[in-house]
Image (cartoon, rainbow, N blue to C red; front, side, top):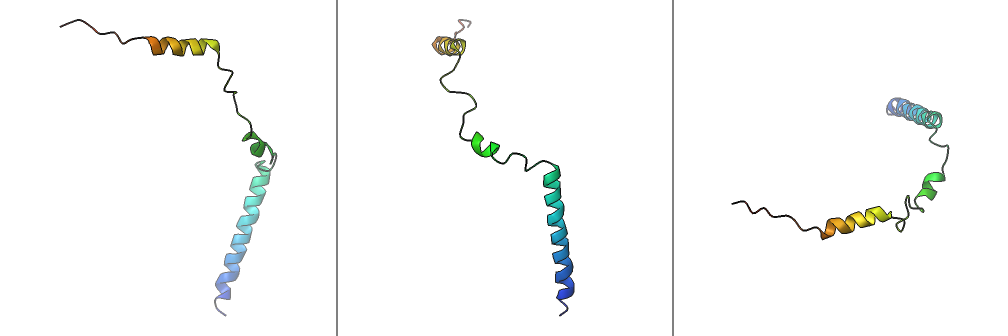
Length: 73
């Protein structure tokens, strides 16, 4: 019977904590748009095929350059 003196306050504290966290989540607008994040994973931020021509040319030029060697001795 003495365990009830511990369990009832612990249950009350956990309930109060759960209510506080729920109210905080509602106030912080955590439940505003529940579907946006679920849908955002389905779409890419930037299409892969739309790389700018300048970027492609710059990568080609960088890959064809040979490292310069110095002839100092």
